[in-house]
Amino acid sequence: ITPEQYENRMILRNAMMAHGFKPLAEEWWHFTLENEPYPDTYFTFPINSESLEQ
Image (cartoon, rainbow, N blue to C red; front, side, top):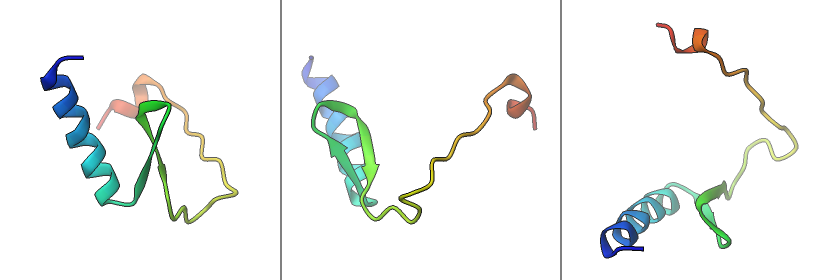
């Protein structure tokens, strides 16, 4: 990756970690909330074009 891409990844990583997220070592774009308030709940939400309307 380019130096700029690396810098942008570090900006994301630092921001996420500052707010309680732990990075996944294998994939730089995945994070897990360290103090998950609902660890046994899987949240699934429908995604469709209607959800984008305001």
